[in-house]
Image (cartoon, rainbow, N blue to C red; front, side, top):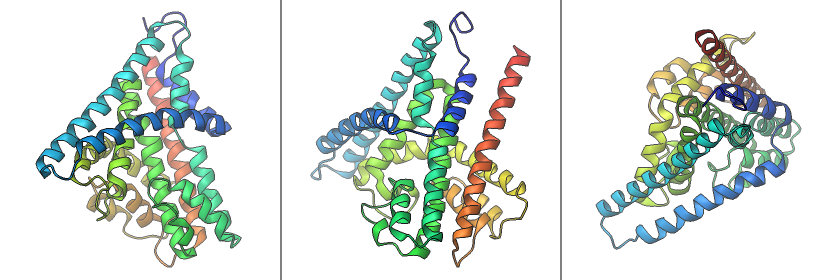
Length: 316
């Protein structure tokens, strides 16, 4: 049973994963290990979409088929996570597998390093290096080769939006579902996000762009937005708390208005960060301030996890 010989508390594992990722970053071997299950899920999802999303079918037919595929794959991911939890909770010293899963998912040091590379490239007028870093930071949000054509002023808000998305998608949301439902919740969220990016494309970020998979993508998009709605509120509150801790107040206006007017929308944390920090004309110093806010939000979240762990120990 949990608590017996060889068992590790999930909150201990989560804090250990955050500390290791922050100190060591994410090596190439770890990145390649992460790509393999991603490619397997994407290959299966792409094959199902090709077979079930045929243009000769009615819109209603394609819509419910998309829902069935999205629900089926997301539940499969959750089932795999709960099987892993059974192994790590009840088999002595199997917890390194769960720690590895957390290391594969959370992205704080890597996100910060990519944003810093964009800022450094802009400050040194090394636009090719800044564009390359931006394409990595905003992977999944930019069309292929789009970053290569961006002028310098356009890269700053895109980098900041990518920073806020990674804070929400790759840090706050996975941690929220891991704390709530364990590895099963973590993989539910990750598969949902992967499907929404694959089927929805730019539509995932709340833009007017049509989803590449058309109406078939509605199930994946709605599932992803539903799973991220509450964590998005947490992300925004962490950003607001980070602003209150800054020595110099943020220069932007309308941040708190964005907090309420953007509620429930997928791009809401990005709009909030832009509203809190900046107003055109864009300057690279604004990106540095956004990176500082990202770091503070990550540290605040880690502090909340420590408090949660202490409360569990006291109440146990």
